[in-house]
Image (tube, rainbow, N blue to C red):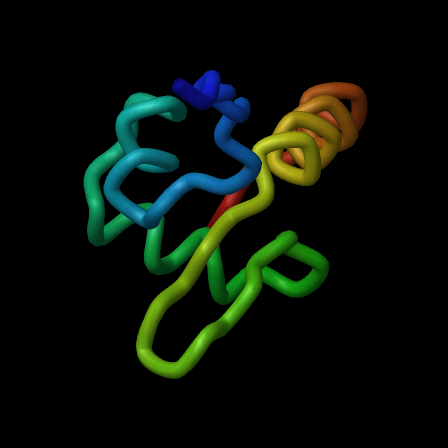
Length: 68
């Protein structure tokens, strides 16, 4: 019998990213439209690379970024 290998998730959906950041889904869609935000668009889906999101957060935290 073959062995199943569970791979680590590479991306978040919009809802998952919103939960990870502790913001609403609406707020997450606004964040996605921010210039330089790491998002992959596949048809109607928006996927957020987990590592890209972590780097984006670290950069914003370092400069005290605020969304208007």
